[in-house]
Length: 253
Length: 383
Image 1 (cartoon, chains in turn brown, blue):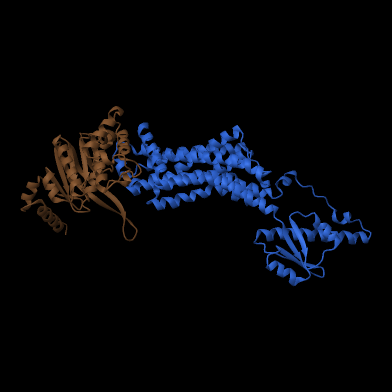
Image 2 (cartoon, rainbow over the protein chains, first blue to last red; image 1 turned 90 degrees about the vertical axis):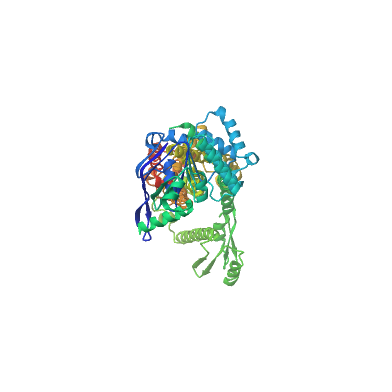
């Protein structure tokens, strides 16, 4: 289980006058993600989703609050958590000058996988994501869909229990998107714990067991898609999203 | 510290650099410049010293003047009928300068901004000085006075060292020292290429985020990148030195310019050179990591790091200006360059050597401690 407890993240940026000003990307956010569950993280651009996901994946540290994964924190055992978690973003960039197989071998090395099983495991993921035809090509020569399939292969290679997926289907065609969505559902059915951020409301409604809605760094709603729709007295998650964002704007004003 | 992660990072960076055509071409071209420079300087200096310069005169030389200029090397004096003719010859480039004479006033006409003009000026000046002394001697003799009583009333004893430094080899020795400094400059340039690519380049390409999701400590990533940069700097530095040895060996046979220049390549000096190149690579790589960590973009890193490449030639500019300072032993990178030159010309000052080695080791340790903290900060990783 992943537990997010009162997490805030503060950044410093320069204003128009060149002075350093502090701002909160995430403000006092709390929720849980259970095993065998896909939690959808929804929100407009600048809502603080990516920052929150980066903190959950251990790339950044919260300014205040705590992220607990498997009852431990990054401060206590960063390496143990990272060995059991995967982060995939729609913007994830991979090394262009190496082949798919070389990348997967490198990842297996970083995850400390047993050398005797690495080759078989790489063959398995290559077959699973239909990468046989381009497995020895350099990543720089692959299409966007092929790169994203490789990205997913990288994520499943070490068979983690936790997935942090940030707009993983962004910019992909319908076939590549479906491959990734099928994979997410399969992993959920295996009892894995998944956080999935997306801009596509229909996608969220179809695959997420629960959703958390963020706006301007604050959590504004949480529940199953049906509960959120009911709470907002709308007919689907898209309308619920617009209503919540509108309410949130009015509150802020 | 997990050495498996460091090794993976090390090989990842090495593979990335060697597969990138732009970076690879730089690693190949840099050492090739060493033999090119040695041969080019040898050729140019030989050409400059062997060239015959022609000085025009608008008068006819006396037999005494002809005797004076007869033994002057690389310069010929040619008489013309009048000033107009000698000026015309100068205009069309058939002479490199000329002397005009009105009564007992001689005027030298040269363009001293050109090498040939400078050479002609020196030759013309020497001829006129000698001729002036000859006339003085002749006059005194006619007056029944011993000229040595006038011209040699005092005796100046020259220090023996100065005679070694006289002549054209002072210049070629300095230029040759700069070729040696270029070996360290290559180490710097390679570290700049590697560090810029593996730090700022990785941030800009977005691959840093990917690698930070792996179960790797930032310190392991930094050490892997640092070692990859130091390793390539060391290897390319060694190749450069390796190319310099045979090129200089043949250069000595081919070019008279290098006859008196010392380039020691015995086993002890080779080991010292290898050690100094290693230290330079370790230090430069660290300095580059610190500066690249502060840069906000690839371009900013590249421009701030490239300034480091000037450091290895600083000691030679100071030497040319006769302004060598003991503090240079403690100026990072510049001190390694100066020490390398001392080793190569077999003129090691052991107190200076100790200063350089001790200070460099201290700098390396301090920089490693600094970068291990620096690269833990989010502003370094995500700026």
